[in-house]
Amino acid sequence: MHEITADRQHNRLRIDLSGRMDRSEIEEAADETVTTAERLREGFDIITDLSGFKPPSPEAAKPIKRAQSQLKEMGVDRVVRVVDEETSQVVVTAFERRSKDIGYSGETAETVEEATRMLEKQAVSGYSA
Image 1: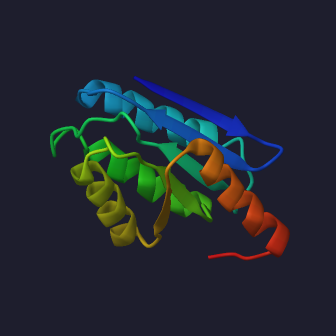
Image 2: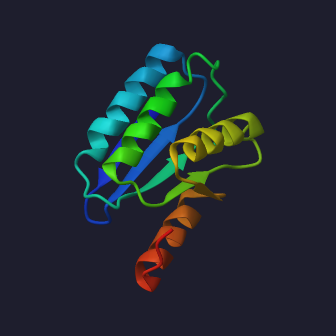
C-alpha cells in the first residue's frame, strides 16, 4: 500500500509505503511520486515513511531507483526516511544505496513528527545539505 501527498506550503513530498508491494504496485507508487512532486518547487524535501514497508524483490525495486533518479533531476533537497525497530535493515540499506548512487543522501528519523521537526529546523536555520 502507498500514499503520496504534496505539501505545497512547505514544499515537501510525503511518501508512505507499507506492507509487501509487488512490482506493479511499486511502479504505480513510483509514477505517482514523480507526478505528485511536479506540483512542488525545486528544492523540495521528502519524508518517506518506511516503517511498515517489507523488502520487495530486487526486480520489483527497480521502479524505486528510477523514481529516485527523477526526483534528483527535479531538484530534491533533503530526504528524511522514517524507520522504526521493525523496519528491515535491508529496506533502509537499499534506499540509501540507491540514493547515493544517484547523488544524494538521506537522513533517518523514528517518527514522521521527528522528520518534520528535522526539516523545519533546517528551514529556520537556513541550513541546506
